[in-house]
Length: 276
Image (cartoon, rainbow, N blue to C red; front, top):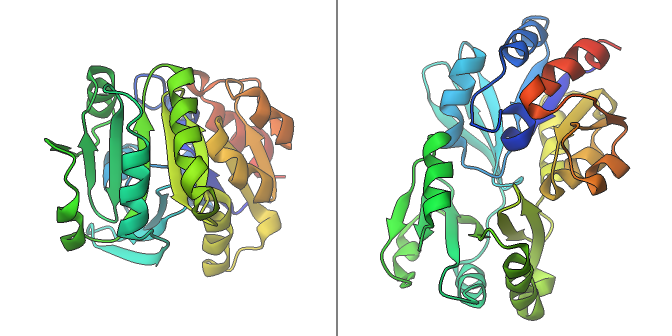
């Protein structure tokens, strides 16, 4: 029987427009009422997940969120009190290098996530729409001077947004050519190329949380769709790919669902497999 479900958000739990299928809400509520833990495992900040937790009805007891592709595990009380249980950040010097190396052309959009804030430099119109649909708060940067970050909370990750996969690969190549040993590179949402510190990923954090909750790794399940979900799908007791997942993710999953994110794939997994 599965006791801990870790789920990616965009293109997995959420519909394409950022809403949640009612089937998912009902299934997740039933799963948690029966003692299970449902934990968002996302590249985003935990602060951007409050609306999702409220919609799912997961704000009635202490809830856990894994953020920044495994960069932090946070417990959130029903009163909204946040407690950072684990964090794995990067140095300011490394963040600055990644930022500078990724500016391969003028229309690159860059995100810098600290533990409690998101800063975006040169935000694109499509990214602005994407953030608005998912109610993600951020601060727009008007220049590329990052000295202010020395006064902020630890930096979790740096990511770049661009609609052209060739440009995203160009960014990946430019960064890894210099700091490959220090970073973990992933791609997500057909728009982002992401850099975490080496050794930090969704899968490692998933098992860290399982240990905290005294849940055996065999009783964990992880759902995802894209390359930044690979680590959790490989390391969980049951790795699950939604029907709209990339071929590389389906190839490593234990279960490949026939339903997409827009068809309530999370509910499909819970109803068919979580009780086994």
